[in-house]
Image 1 (spheres, rainbow, N blue to C red):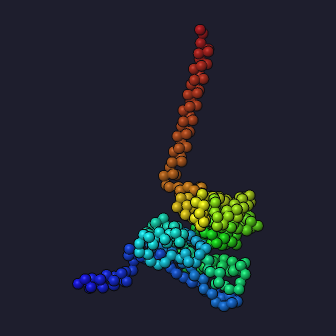
Image 2: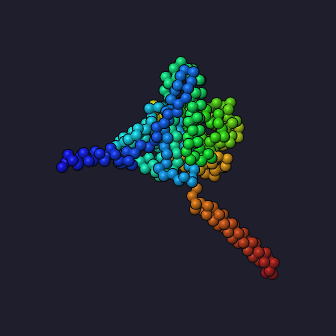
Image 3: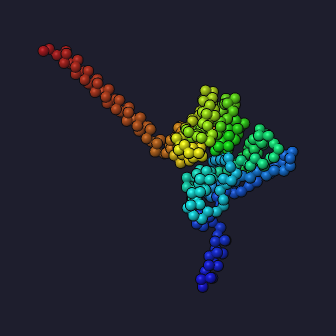
Length: 321
């Protein structure tokens, strides 16, 4: 009896199609294949597709560029300890408001990690970086073509070396993204800063980062701002302990409402939600005019009192003793 029960439970575990103890794979694994002078190559990337898609709607897309190809979330986890480790080693999971229940988030996530350096042996660093950026753009374009993506709500973010690609990608395609949020990089090409004046940018860096100095991001932010760009720099205080001082993505996503801010942006329009604030709710629309009316009413009330006092004073002076 016990043996039969175990066999049936094992068969159920193997065949279960949905979310069983949090084991449903989050990301679809895909390969972008192309050919170089050195032969065919395959660029691995992962895509999160919202659980319930409406055929009549189009959805936002968050593009996450990561530094380490080993940070790809595995398809299954079984306990909270593994979830915590995943959240540390795969920062993309923190994009979810509750990554144990991703159905709460109704947007696509395109996760592209840097390939290892030996992926293209014998190629110089500049050519390697250009190839990676070019193929990342092609992956993005394929994703936007093959899925119901809202073209005006494509957001770009990245961490560390992925952040360097973030700068490179937006400088090559400044009109593609509704918002950009680089985190912890060496900064972009300041000679291209004038191209970035029309896209909202929110830069994060550890204040005392001992892995990558914040000087590059500070210089880039200052240059874009002086060119008239809409850019905000947040230097996050973190413990000065080796790699921890570099992990600015944690407070950016968990404390600064970064994802909410990005999702509030729409290409070609100005968002009234400033960096670091939560999204405006429907009742905010009612609150603002109500506050305005109250202030007008108070102003009118105090003005009437002032006039009444002045009138009383004039009458007192005019009356005979």
